[in-house]
Amino acid sequence: MSEIPYFVNLQQAIDICNKTGIQTMVERVGLDECHGRILATDLPSLVNDPPFDNSAMDGFAMRYEDTTNPPTNLNVIGTIQAAGQEDNISLKAGEAVRIMTGAPMPNGADAILQIELTSMEGNVVTLQQEGMKNFIRRTGENLKQGDVALQAGTHLTPSKVGLCATMGYSSLPVVKKLKVAIISTGDELKQPGDELNRGEIYESNSFGLSGLVRWLGHEPTRLQCIGDTLEDIRNTLNEVSKTHDLILTSGGVSMGEWDFVRKIMEEEGDLHFWRIKLRPGSPPLFGIWNGTPIFGLPGNPVSSHVVFRMLVAPWIRNATSADGPIEAKSFAKLATKVKPTKDSLTLRRVSIENNGLELIAHQKIHQGSGNLASIAHSDAFLILQPGKQYSIGDTVEVMFV
Image (cartoon, rainbow, N blue to C red):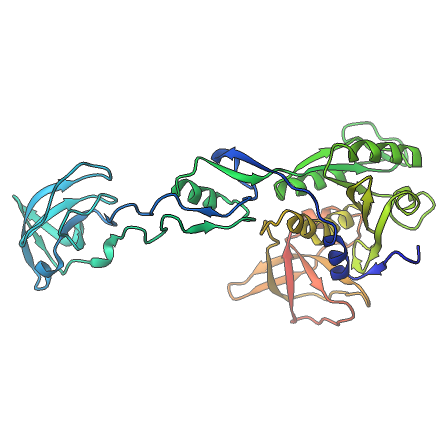
């Protein structure tokens, strides 16, 4: 055990984990299935956007030089109603064309005036002010054909998926979802809905961890709880390591006699570190089991959630070269006293109030690591640096739950 890094700080733990990569694969999926996925290659635009000069307003297209002394009367020689409409309209001096938003500009026109600044009688339009050159959307002003608009590793949000459609793509190369096995350990655990006997509790960690894996865009497999025996743990780890890219266990990693995940990793696995300076969540481990990376997370539900957010998620993003999803962070002013720890990064659950000028953080709820309601009923984690003292009125970094 002396050769294994022990009780490292969070950044040291992240660095150790990042030395272990993972073989990712690429698949091509339809655009509808790309939301939340990770782009596998740089993506150049297949088209110019816009593909032609077009109007940004409903109104009239004209030559700007004909509008410099308003009010101006121009002869209307036609109408262009929609993008893609066939037309051969060319403007000459003293002429205008009625045009709709998105319709292509007629030849010779270099300005637009919106309809509410005009009046029309017969085929003559009166312009109340000069034409607007900036109301024309120019060819390629958003995207130029061949230019890379999204880079490999991009987390595909709805707006970015829409951008891919704008660029002309109906399908995309994305990182194949990691298959993540989630294993909760403990003789006392029962599935929600089962009848509880004295000393038993409902298992919840696997449900929360499954949601966090999906949040990152990957595929969780929630296994049934396994008992606190080396044989059960060994058999389960052997089985899932054959079919999964990553293993997450919950429970069994502390210092007790029945913490068999830690024991089996010490004796039979390839353990890279054990315990980190993080509260809640100090007992996790990381290593390799039969060639598959494994994170041993604490059994307390708050600790399990915190370790995933602070350690597992950064590793998955790094291993898949993903730029997101990232943690939403900000700063808030303390409204209540908080207690940091001497040697560990500490996360306290708080409610956030916006008073119109700044965010205010209130610690209102019991902070026990077994109290999952403390996350569910809070808005954010305070991130308290080790050994630092905090007072009411101090500004502190927060990470939203």
